[in-house]
Structure formats: C-alpha cells, structure tokens
Amino acid sequence: MSFANSCNQLFDDTIVRYHVINDVDAPMSNPYPAGTIEANLFTKNWIDTVQWHLEDIIRDPNIDPVEALALKRRIDHSNQERTDLVEEIDSYFRNKYAQVSILPDATINTESPAWAVDRLSILALKIYHMREQVNRTDATPDHIARCKAKLDVLLEQRRDLSLAIDQLLDDIERGRKYMKVYRQMKMYNDPSTNPILYGKK
Image 1 (cartoon, one colour):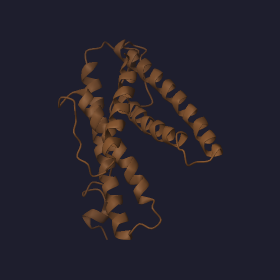
Image 2 (cartoon, helix red, strand yellow):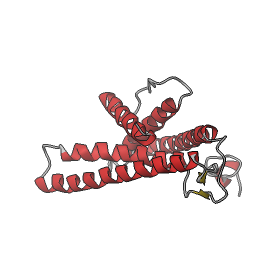
Image 3 (spheres, one colour):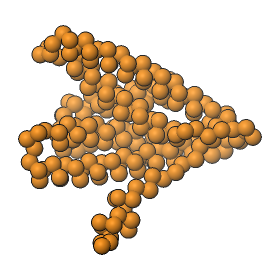
C-alpha cells in the first residue's frame, strides 16, 4: 500500500474511533507505539477531528460569550499543536531521505510532504461528515443530492492529492525534488513577538 493510502486508512480509522465516543473532551488513546510515524499521524488526525467539532460548537448562535472565548483560545492552542505535529512529521521525511543524492536539476515543491498530508487529514474529515449528510433520513432529497455531488468531488480530490503525495515522495527518494522545512514562526502565540503579550503601548 502506498504511503498516502496508508494515511487515508489510518485517518478514516481514527475518525471512526473518535465518533464512537464523540466527545471533544474525551482523552486520546493512541494505539500506535510512541515515536512512530503512525503515532504522529494518529495524533494529528485526532487533533483535527476534535477541532472540527470545536468549530461546530463555537458557531452556536446562542453560545455564552465567555464559553465562546474559552473555545476560541482552545482552538488557537489546537492550531499550534497541529502546526508542531506537521513540522515533526516533516522531520521524519527529512531523516528518511537524508542520504539521497540530489540531482543537479532537482526542483523544490510548493509545499512540504507533511503539509500535503495535513490536507489529506482534513479531507478525510470532510468526506466523513459529508457522507453523514448523504445518509441523513431527516433531510430533503435536494439536500442529499447536493451533498452527494459534493462527496463525489471530495473523493476525487482525495484520489488526486494521494497520487500527488506519492509522486512527490517518489521524486524526493530519487533525488528529482528536494525538501526544505520552514518553521511556521507564528508570532501571535509567542509572548516575545505579540505586542499584546509583551505589553507594547
């Protein structure tokens, strides 16, 4: 099985595992050995899945403003965890391909492998929840038809992205492309660079 398809299967399994409990406060129980790429992919998708539901909750028009602020800060923290994990996954790829001889005419990609995998994780969530809409028994036929059309597009998008990821990894492995990892350097989470946090007047 290709790397991208392995990711798709792992992400689908993770999303199903979450929905058995279906609680944003449920503790994560990672079934993979710590330090493995599978463990990081599971954690990454679990974070994405919890955040998906936090984004639903915060859009409740009747939500208490204090609760909404707490949720917004929780989502911000989740985004930082997500970014950190993507960078950790990219470190896995850098180590895996560290000994590859880069060809003289090698090119760089617009995004790193892990950021492409990040998009694959989000696609898995879109597919799961769009399929839920298609299977609703309380929705109109028009709603179900529109969601079915969207689901078909999402599935095609996942096939295309999976192929692109596998082709990118093959190009890196053969030296036709090389990867560089740029840390996100998010300034608003850093007390030394966010003016509000360091007290700039």
